Image 1 (cartoon, one colour):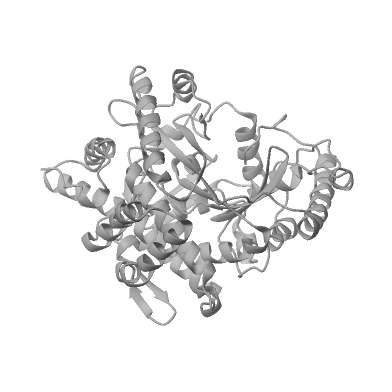
Image 2 (image 1 turned 120 degrees about the vertical axis):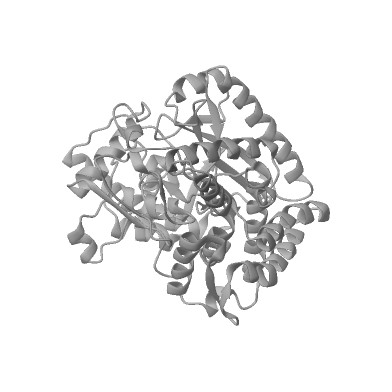
Length: 494
C-alpha cells in the first residue's frame, strides 16, 4: 500500500466522500491516459524482498524496531508483523551486466544487515513461509506499530464480521484447519515483488503476459511447503494469503462476490480496465482523504497524485498489480508481479527475475500472443496448479496441451527467456548464468519447496519430531542461503 495513514478509524461521511473521490481520480486518470505523456526513457526494473527475523533457534524474533534501528538503512522498512522487515531495491536498468552489479550489491547489503542483526541475537531468513511459525507467535503484541497495519486489520475483520477460517489441504493428505481473529497469519507470507515500468499503450500486453506466466513461475519458484507444522501446498503462501485476507463471510462467497486477493477474471485491453474494476467491485477499506483536487491539478498542468485511487488499489491484492506512481513530478506506470516467494538465495531470486523479464518480453512481442490462444480460466487453473504442486505440476499450454512444468520450461519458456533478455540488451554471459539456474532446477526437479520437504522427511526418518525436524531444516536452509549456491545444488543433510 505504500503510504502511512493519519488515523486508524474513519467516519461514515469519510467513506461516502472517499468513494466519490476515487471516481473523480478514475475520471482524471482516463484523461491522463488519453492526453498526457508518461515517463519511459528506458526500461527500469525494481524489486522488493520481504524477510523474516529469527532467533538463534530459528524461531520468529519479533524485534523489527530494534533491528531496523541497528541496520540504519532507509532501504529496509517494517512489514505487518514484528518478525518481518522489507528490503526495497532501487530501480535499475535491465541491460548489459547490470544483474551482476545488482547481485553484488544485494549480497553486500544483506550481509551487512545480517551482521548488524546478529549483534542483537537475530538473523535474517529469505523464505516464502517461515516453517517454525506456530500459533503462539500470532498471540499478544505480534503486529508492527503502525496505524496503517492496525487500520487494515480492523477493516478486514469488520468487513467479514467473523473470525477467519483457514482450511488448506495438501496434496499428500495433511490438512490445516484453524481459526484466526486477526490478520496475523497473513504476515507469515513473505514474497519477492518484481516491478517493470511500461508505456501506457503496452501495459495491457505486459499484464496479460504476466498472468499467463504466473503458473510456470510458481511451479519453478515454490518455496513455502509448511505452515503451522503442516506440509501443505508447494507454495502454500498463495492459498494462505488468499484465505487470511478474505473479507467475505460464507454467504458472500456463495453469491460470487470477488475476493480481495484476486487473480482476475479476464484479459484486459488497458490499465484503465483494472482501476475501473477496483472502483466497481471493491468497497473502500482505508478511506483516508487527500486535500488535492485531482481535476484541478490536471487542468492546471500539474501531475495529479490520484491519492485515493492509489490507496484503494493498494488494498486489492492482485497477484499482478497495476501501479500508477510519480517520481520527480513525472507519472509512470508499472506492472508489479507479486507471485514469487522470497528466497532461497540471491542468485535464485535473480534467476527467477531474469526468467520473468525475459519471457515477458518475448510474449509481448509475439504477433499472435499466448493469451489470444488461451482462455483466462486456463491461466487461472495453471496458477492454482503451479502453487499446489510446484515443480511436479502439469500445466496446459497452447499447442502442447497438458505438459509437465519442467518440460514446458525447458522446451518452450527458456528459449523465450533467452530471446527476451537478448532484446533487453542483457549480456550473453549473464543470460547464460542466470537462466542456467532455471535449467538446473528443471533437470534436477528440486526447487526450494522440494528441498524443504525432502530434508524434513529425512530428518523425521531419523527419529526427529516434526517441530524439531522443521527447526533443523531451517538451520540447514540458513547456511545454504548464505552460501548463495542455487537451491537445485543443495544436498540433503547427512
